[in-house]
Image: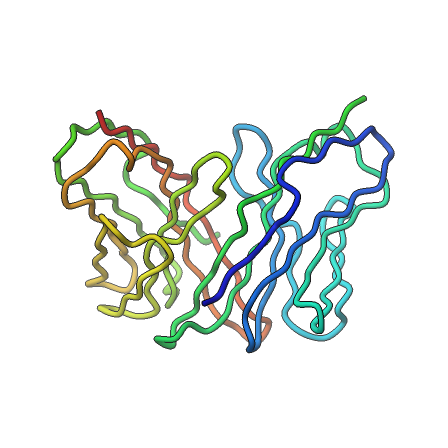
Length: 116
Length: 114
C-alpha cells in the first residue's frame, strides 16, 4: 500500500541554521510529490511539487527539495532558516490507487521550531 | 479562483448522532478527498473519489461513509458519531493536467462529538 514516512517529528533549529527534513514513500509506480507547510492557526500552503523532469525542485520562501528515485525520497531543504519558518511541514505523495483513482497520501508531519 | 467550500466550520454533535459534512468545489475537478487532521498524526485519508458515484477507501475508512452523486459535491457521513471522531476534517479536490495534479483544500470543519 502507498505510504509516506517523515522520520523527524520535531526539529529545533537556531536562526540561520540549515534545514533538511526527510520524506520517504513506498510506491512502485509513477508518483507526484509535494511539500506543504501549515503555520500556526493557518491552512495548508503548498511549498513545492515535483511531477517530472529536473529532480531538484525549487519552491517558495527559499525552500527546495530533491527527488531521488532510487531511494524513494523527497527531502526538503533550506540553506538558512528564519524564525518565521516555524511551522508544521507535511510531505505528500499522489499516485494511482488499486481502483484506478488518484490517491493523495500525507506523512505525519514535522514540527519545526526556529529559535532566535 | 478555485474554491473548495465546506459547509460547516464548527459543529458539536452528540454521541450516536448521524453527521453530514458537505464539500463543494466549483472547478469541475474529477478527484475529491476527505481527510481528518489530528495532532501528531498528520492528515489521514478517509475516502476519496475520482468520478461521480465512484469512491475508494482511504487509510482510515472505519466509521465513515461517503456520497458523490454530483461531480461538484462530496459528502462525508458519520453514521453514528463517537467521541474518537472528534477532529478537524479537511476536504480537497484536484485536477490532473499535463503538469500533474494541482490540489485545493477547503478551510476545514471542526467536529466535536460529546
